[in-house]
Length: 246
View 1 (cartoon, rainbow, N blue to C red):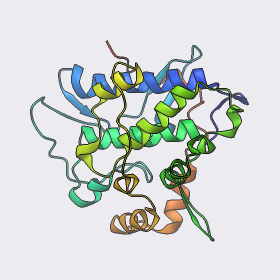
View 2 (cartoon, rainbow, N blue to C red; view 1 turned 180 degrees about the horizontal axis):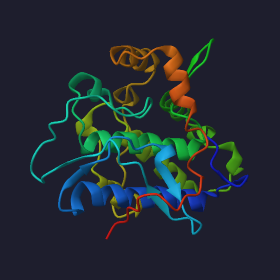
View 3 (cartoon, rainbow, N blue to C red; view 1 turned 135 degrees about the vertical axis):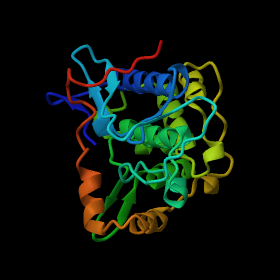
């Protein structure tokens, strides 16, 4: 994923502000509006940025509403490959937690400058696995977008990578709420330490492929879907649906 504005790579400060802006928007949708709104398609190509570098979450075509205190009754699997939570392919039920999963993948994409999943003839490249490999080798910053030229705040980058892994945890109960995400990003709460990397479902290429097949998707559609949003976070738009926290 190339995060750029008219050929200029977005700085880490700009990216971090975008991350926080989308988190505030999702918190508003999940907890602060009169209804619960599940976006169901959180991804980089649905993040739009205005000339003042304010991030908006757009495209609510798949969104669903329900009352606070109730459960979603949606049972059809929708979303974008690479951002779909594993439980969605089993139950078909979208939830606030499945939005959190997609947000976690978005965090990793913004930090690393790579699409979530790319199928190549010789090997399958899964972003989460690459980050986990770097983490296991105690070189997690090797996964960071090289276009940043190491010009980022180490503590913030470490936080975003760790939070991205936590949000995209394969177990829904292990993921934070968006309110907790905001607290982590604002340093009001300390991010948990990852003691067991296996719990993140490392080496998930085969699992992801099987999920796609369960949805009736071919490898060709996987390649197409994983590449269409490769340069979208830095795009400018004034027609997006503005989501801001209170």
